[in-house]
Amino acid sequence: MDIDPRQPAKTIQDFTRRQWIKGGGALAGSLLWPRLLQANPDASAKRCILIYLQGGLSHYESFDPKPNAPSAYRGEFGTIRTSIPGIHFSEHLPKLAKRAHKFNLIRSAYVDSPSHPVAIYQTLTGVPLAAANVTGTNRNYVHPSVGSWVAKTFAGKTKGLPPYVAIPHSGQLGIRVHFASSGSLGAEFEPMESGMTPDTAKAPYLAPQSLAQSRENPLSRIHGRFGLLNTLEGQQNLPESVTGLGDYHRHAAEMISSGKAAQAFDLNQEPAKARERYGDHLWGQQTLLARRMAEADVPFTLLNYTLDQERGQDWDTHKDNFNIMRDVLLPPMDHSVSILLDDLEERGLLGTTLVAMYGEFGRTPKINRDAGRDHWEKVFSIFLAGGGLKSGVILGSSTTAGDVPKDRPVHFNEVLATIYHQLGVPLVDSVMAPDGRPIPILTSGKPIAELIA
Image 1: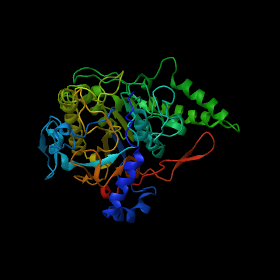
Image 2 (image 1 turned 90 degrees about the horizontal axis):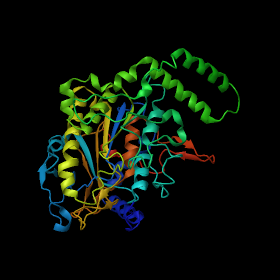
Image 3 (image 1 turned 120 degrees about the vertical axis):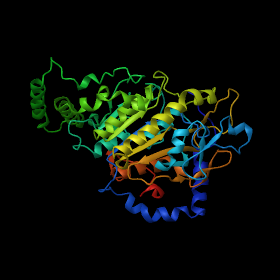
């Protein structure tokens, strides 16, 4: 795990905050912030699909190309016009370029660390945990992930369905870290894993075995066990873990008995044309499964765009960046995300389904000796669509060299705050740490007023 020993994040934070305030950008947001911090009872988003690009997407080769940068920075790709006048993407995102008016881009986002574990922890929980690593602190035992917070908000509203699904699994960096879990919220809000989908449009998909009713454990036996659990829960001073597990198992039994979850996961029901439309590749089939989750009203789906399930850092292009991006990563992402937007819109779901796509950070301005780009936390691009947000907004910009925000810097927690606001998750919510301290849902960050419709 290589950590980039560049200047502390505080330096860029102070610089960019001053620049934004100097430009007057803080005024409009400050008028809306008190309202945006409260729970949103009229939240327009009913569900969220988060497409996570583990390793860190290069903004240069995707949404923020720099054709006028010095040759050591700009890279090999050309640019392409988008449906938004004056805005260009990489030439290898032609389908998303045609749909740029359907989504928003933040081109001035930044996080607090160039370390994979630390930045992944932050982009999934909102906490820059310096101790996060792949060996010891590789689970978020305390701070709940964004998916778990959303699942808690929708608790009781997803009868027969999991409130939180991870496709194909909930791990990051392969399975070396698990920062997408429920932390202190408990087992009830852990993600349900889909398992691997097929990597072709014709191959069958085996839904999670946990959704199948076991002959050895019929529903009568399960309900009998719940009777015992109810008796136990009537006792005083039971640990919270016991009561939490009770809710978890009740929900699990409900999913099995109703059949709604099994129906939602049955990718094999999709017509051949639908499966082919999303793409004859792994990400296409996973994205179609995510659409099925949205259609079934699963509140939160984490979709990991990962090809190497062992290493889990496909977008970490330290070597051969241009060939890998052109031939392996960008084409299936460009196609599948474009079709997802179209499909959600055709089904009348895009306005109530928030689609977010990002990695843990960006890539270095200067191309290294291996024709790659290294870790860069100081600026990167974030994709947000649907969910009642405005569309076609290009928020912020980076410098000509693409090394830092030029205007309207966006700390990553503002992105999470925006997702929470649109889904009605109150930013004043908190959990209790093991030592009894209340831990807020976010220690910093307010919804992005420029994107709120």
